Length: 124
Image 1 (tube, helix red, strand yellow):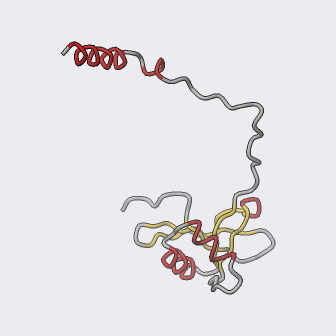
Image 2: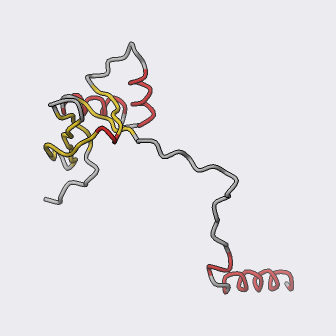
Image 3: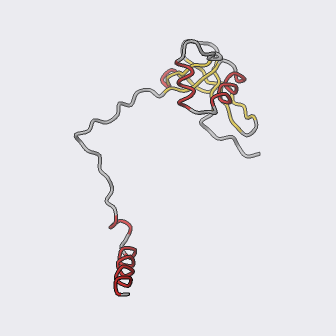
């Protein structure tokens, strides 16, 4: 019985400590180099319908999309991954079924390319 009470007392003592006393924040190790901040790539398609087909066929899984686009024999549906440094701005926006899509201007082309919007769709 004393062991149970002693264990219960220990649990209460641990719970009574402030949250900051239980864990110290992790500081970055100066010996470990930081991950290079290269331009992140964005999935873009020439036609909105093709973007929606690709997302449906891959379940929207980024790894599955990347694998499909890397396969030269796969149907890419006119989709590619474009670096953020090549994006000039938003040309058009549409919301379908509660999901927002943007057609973004890309450097060195006069056509915009469709992607999932980074901005959520407004509530109806």
